[in-house]
Length: 171
Image (cartoon, rainbow, N blue to C red):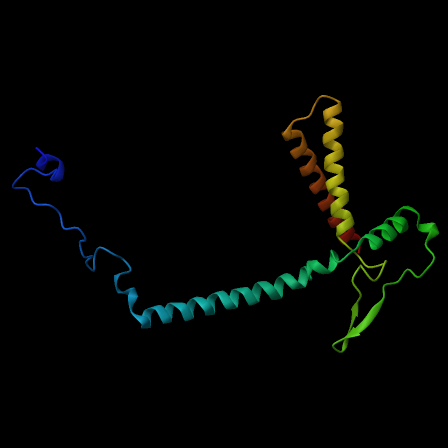
């Protein structure tokens, strides 16, 4: 009675082996377990990835410097910068950026220490505020949908991109 539960195969039928050994044709990476092949592939991968990462670093840094520099701000800087943007006639000081010698070349101070340094914190926060206020406005008018916010976001990015292209064209 209990034999039927222990052995699901009928008598005379052989059970498959529990762990069949893979043959050389069953696994495409069968011979890749040798140390020489692993080392060779590792060195080739490091060389390929290393050269491509150096290429990316050199070409990206030509167009984009360290983005942390543009976000190195504090509350006092934001307050003073907004005051300069909104009320430029109240600004009593110089309008040039402050430079300092670093490693034999001149480098500009980050925005936290120089009110005239360019930053990206204020433009990004202004863009986020624009999207939120556009959502509230659409909600008050009864036309709010996620697609409408997406459309506002896309239009804002396109407008921002057109401004950059326009300014690059003028300079």
